[in-house]
Image (tube, rainbow, N blue to C red; front, side, top):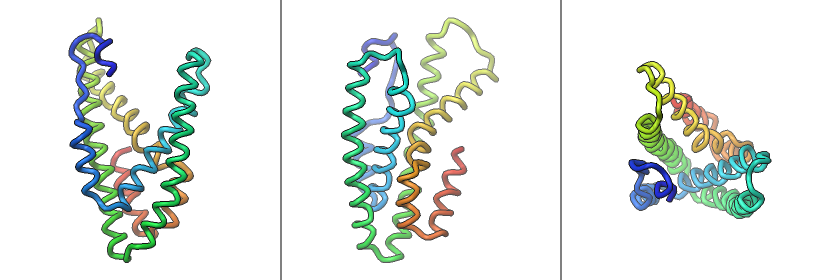
Length: 185
């Protein structure tokens, strides 16, 4: 949507329909975990970047405040639904769901890697200054890190997510999740 107001050439690479289809092929347990993390990072985005910014218009802030309230309701429902779904699983099914959650996060990271590189290339093509190869490498690394923080870590490191994950998984399963996340940071 923003591309219309930007200089020519901006591309948003992910196809939302393809992503939705791929996510919905995963076990419900893994999807609920991912959705809860997304709802929590949406709330964190508001609290850390929109709410404290005195330079934003009141209307803009109000719009996102009501979005936060909606996401809060969704998160509460997911915090009830995820344990309900968990109660239906055998230990083997839960272990498989943990593996699928790790796969979902890896898929999200793959999207972030491609889009962050595309966004940096777009920036570089419109920037009035030239950057060295080392500077370009550092810019790409920092943008990917920022995207990972926003779209993965601010959700999975949220206290509410961590508390619920601890209740629903074994130490060994959490270790696998943490090991997979460590490769991204």
